[in-house]
Length: 502
Image (cartoon, rainbow, N blue to C red):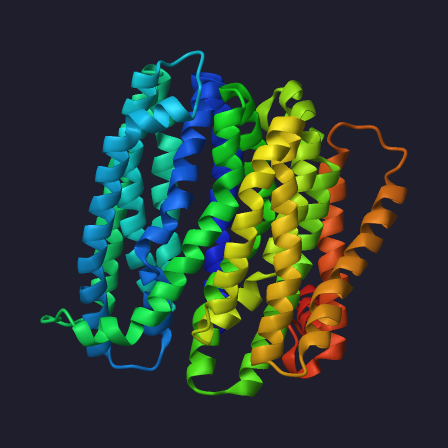
């Protein structure tokens, strides 16, 4: 098993635990603290997403540079240099949120259970927690750049268990929201120290130096990444930010639940992207066009193959899923069409990932930045208009518009620029074919289970759709690309038969 496969498996285990922890623990948060408290908890994620740009592209730059073929000393100096800059950035973030907490509390999160002063105190704790969590992503990006994603996922799983699961113990006996946020601060500080120690052990250099020349050589790429992250953060989080202002706290909590479920396709495919980005960066730095093309097509196809059935199942069975998840049918009914719209946009976002990271591996950030600016100019007035006129469902319209348009605009431009003559292959074989195959499987499964009325039959249908569409799609890919196949089915069957005959 090669390192990329190990990293993908490790990333999947980490993401699987992340999803399971969300699926399990959110219901307890709602039961113990209430929907409004969960809305404030989700606002933590909104702020974290909005401030992701504040790392000035350092995390993405560090991942890319540590994946390149350079000396250990240079890598160590890069880490030493970036972490000094990061201290200043994260300190500024914490100070900014602490001093602007009253303004944010009075402008957003209109609560019937908490006063603005109380909400402001929660926001100050969120500010400290966000700053620490952002800082830890720098070290995580460095470890990932060294293709040690098995290690980062071990750390993340343990951290997630304590952060999301063990926190239920203190809030059960002391059901106060400040207890939850204090716990987050402690957990974020611990993972920051653990990840830093792990990265420094992988780069043994007793005397690293702060290098201005390294800042200059990576500065253009880092600034480009900062711009992309800034625009992307606003485009991705603007719906939640506006809903927190124009909807009631309870409605914002409902929207947060719908948004969390609709993010599942993205959560599932991100481990692939995380593992493949260093590999693409390595092939590009070596000017290995053949390997770059093979890797791009293989994992573009895999992302579509995995994300499509998940998105379709969430869209079809959202009411059953949310009812099972939260135990509250009224939430499921209120968010049914919100989930369907959000998951459509999420699917198109997933299918952009390999294109996006292909551009980053080539150090190209302009098209993502320019497209993001145009989307931002359109989206902000559109989302305000949509929410004020159509309510919760209106928040989803710009999300779908952004992701569908950017999929075609950015995708066509970047693939044409960096992989000439590969555009039709990408669109037909990597994108549209897996979607069509999955759609056929969905229709067949729905026909087979048409007469079944059990409330849990959606689970059987979802598993059947996922497994069958994956098997059929991979089989087609292997037939078309025998030199770049995922699995050798014949060899697997021989091994199975050999084990059964013993």
